[in-house]
Image (cartoon, rainbow, N blue to C red; front, top):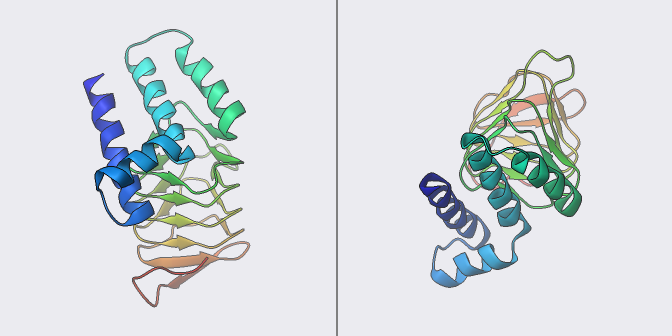
Length: 181
């Protein structure tokens, strides 16, 4: 339980920093009290704790509630890093044993999963995933990369890259600041 509360505090700090650029008490309180993203992450941390303590049915009940209320499906074996931010959670599906790094941003209606039951994606830290993007198979998305809206990623994306199109073409980022999606 101590680990879960530590993760929730870390999530609140990272989300406040992402949302407002600061980690003062007002920013943290705003994230914790008003952010759908924080509620999703808190439910997921509770699911992780239920699995770790082998509490029957709790993970399933929380997953169903998370899907029904928040419109997001996160598989029981998915690993979420600190401060994962769901800008728009509706329609996001993260399946299997996908690994999501710290401060990854999902812009809505995303699929992170498998197309041929051959493995699940690993998404490194500080990646932005544009609305409608699909990341499929045992691919690695490098740190600080940007996945464009509606892109379908079927191959590895190196760090500091931009992936756009169907199937996604990969380009180096021209800047290290925010890249519009």
